[in-house]
Length: 567
Image 1 (cartoon, rainbow, N blue to C red):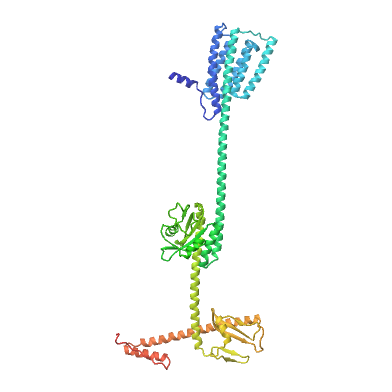
Image 2 (cartoon, rainbow, N blue to C red):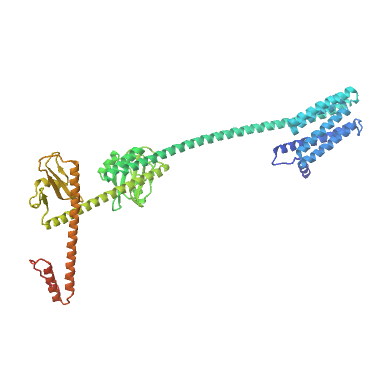
């Protein structure tokens, strides 16, 4: 067993991992050389037994061929594979040529050996080498024919049996080479078919990948177009709702716009009550939603409904198929609902409500829609908060305006009561005080409305004197020539005069008020200083009564008494 293993290992060609053509050439040499060497040995033995001299030129050539083939084998084993092939072909061609010249000439086996060398060259070295050997063989054939025709060399014919052996040897070698050539071609054909199958498989895989890629690109394109459309819709909605400040108008507008732009058959807005116990429906676009509004629909902040889940936990919730979702609240007012999604409305990290969207289609919502719809929910929450703040500011502003108007009315009423004269009239010659009790009926509408009173053609024009929206007086101009048309310049002049008069009167009131306040503070200071200068109770009481009586009018009686019972 070990001997056979060693023989096989010795006869096996070397392996060159980086060069497949080199492996194939080494394989051919390992297949061809040993049988040829063995055949040459047998052939030499047969020739000698047929009576041919062992040192005959033909025998010597055959022995030389055997040595060359052994040399070729050794070169192949050490890695010089292509050099071994060239030496093999060259040695065989030279040996064949010599045999042809020393034996039977162009009619013998020597010349027929050219065919074997040509086949071997094609197998080992390729088409070019085979073509070169064929060309040299043709030249060699004509050279042998020329030598034979001129009589320069006399050829001898081997015995018939030797000729038969020689031709048999050539035929065997030829069959081996042809078989190897056919195997090589068959192997190349199989490789080509395998490559074709692999190529076809690769093409199919590439085609499948291309179809999948095109499908993926198309889906991605549709998704991006949908996302862009949704973002554009959100932007349009944001612009639309940003212009609405009234909360009662804003919320229904939001539900209507979201329903129209996204195609949801029901959109509702829930807001959390002040106690944080219920989410109360504030607006809806569907008929069922409006009926729910009429009935005061509300949901507790728990996980028994999608809206309750969202408002209690601050997380979105999707029911792709409400029939299979345990959290979905089956609402009899919305029987067509097949999919539902709710998003929390957040302001400053606090959940103030939920945006509820319902569709008649199963799987109407997807995870890809969440970022866009979250943006929409944030815009809605900001709009709601802005509307709330706007209403609060408007309410505070109205309260401030009312308070200020009351203050101005009170202050000016007190100021007017203290004034000796509240009006004057200039008749073109002199200024005379106006009787404060004789309030004319024609100025009452101007005082009540605070608007200019003038006819297209009139003898009188009446303008309000306004201070921060409050009418504090009137300016009246009468024409002594009867009715006339008042020009725009005259009206502008009168309006400017009324405005300047209001400012001047206000400054005078403020100065008078400041003086009164200063006088009051000064009197308080003096009384405090007098009271503080004495230390016993009776002196303090006497001083306080006396100082208060002095500061007040002489017609005033001041009494200061301590309550003995309480003390």
